[in-house]
Every structure is written in structure tokens, then in C-alpha cells.
Image (tube, rainbow, N blue to C red):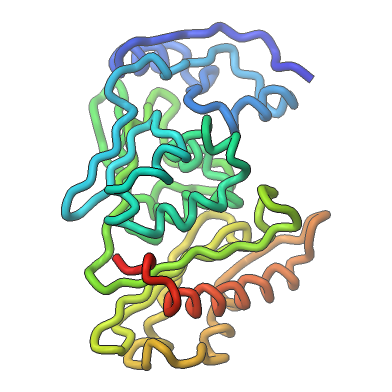
Length: 289
């Protein structure tokens, strides 16, 4: 199938893009990488009358790293962020997660910010945004505002972004020194949507866990943060994962059954992947922030 008819807009500045979005309202969609949007249009799951193509907008393709954040512009491709040495050193979890995003061809074109704005529960980067305490930078007719990642997602494919707002960038928060991270997911085939996935961050001091948390893929309606500290804090970082923690994960996730897997299987898988992710933090030097 092919998309329905639409008007293509090619703004050259952020202000121009926002002006078009304000004019067309809910009948407009922003086009960046298009790896999520174009299939939706082709299947006629959405038929907007206007596409606002921001690929010609200056200033949206940068990655900036400072002591607190890794800031990713709206036009940064997954592959570019995955290869960015500064971002990888400051926040290894980005690279760990991006390696799991779809196929290389899609990562070459798709944007990290677009994936987050798409708000697919099966997307890897929304979970990373929440786990890192990320911030979404939005701009609209009334000016700029910042939205905490934990407040950005309202439901599957739904966010708190207004129709006339554009996401300029997403800031991923850096972890304290000594934090170990890992990202693990399971799919039927490489590049398929994950049946379940998990990102974990474990703060370690003197060989003991000081804090730990996780966020999940494909098993919650929106990415949520699970505090693992009540079970792990004070334990040896190299100790086996206790069954109590796996019970905590199973109680936290809320998967649905579909043609690919049942809810009970996804719940079990989320717990097992959490165990594997925590084990991986002990064996990956690259996982240290």
C-alpha cells in the first residue's frame, strides 16, 4: 500500500516548523528519519494531510556531552549516536541499547529522538530515556518547555506533546561514577520487535550495590522505572540475583498477549532478562559510567 495524499512542508528553521505545525494542528506529522512514520502511512494506519519534513532544519543534528547530560538533537541518526565516541564514553547504555534497535539499515536513517517521540512500548530508546532521568526539549508557539521523560509518555504511541510542538532534542542523564549498565532483550529474529527487554543501572561502591533500577521494553504500556534497591542495596555486586528480585519484576510488568507471545511468557521472560542484565553488568567493563 501507499500513503494517502498529503502536503509536504520543508521548513528551514525551527520557527518555521513550529509555525507550520501551529497552522495544520492535529492534521500534521513531523518527518525526521521516517522509519516509524512511513510504515504507518503506507499501511494507512494514519493519514495526515500534512508532513512537516525537518531534515532541512539547521541545528538539530548535534550530540553534546557535558558533566550532567548527553544531549541528542532531533536529526541525530541511531547509527551516528551509536558511533559517537563522546556519548559512548559518557553513557555506555546508549550504545548498549542502540545495538538492539531494528536492523543496521534502519539505524542508518532512523532518529533516536524520533523513536522516543513515537512512544512505541516496544522501542528501546524510550526505556533508556526514562532510566537515565531524561528530559525532552519541546518548542511550540508559546515558547520552549522541558518535559521529564517519566512524564512524557501517556500510553502506547501517545505522549504529552501538543500537536503544535516540535521536539528539538532529548537529554539523557549521566549516571554517577561507578554505575554499571546493561541492556538485554529477546526477539524471535534479529531486528524484530522484542518480546521483552530490560535496561538496568547498578551503582556500586566498594564492591557493594548502593542503588539499582530498571526500565522495560514491550512489557509495560509506557516505559516505567522499577527501583531494585529494596532488594539489592547493600548486597555484594557479584552475588547471584535473588529470587525475590525476580518476583519484584514479575509483579511490576504488565504485558499483553498477542500472536507472538502470551502475557505469562513475557512476564517470565522479563524477569529472566533482568537476571541476565544484572549478570552482564559484572562482566562488561564498557558498562561502567
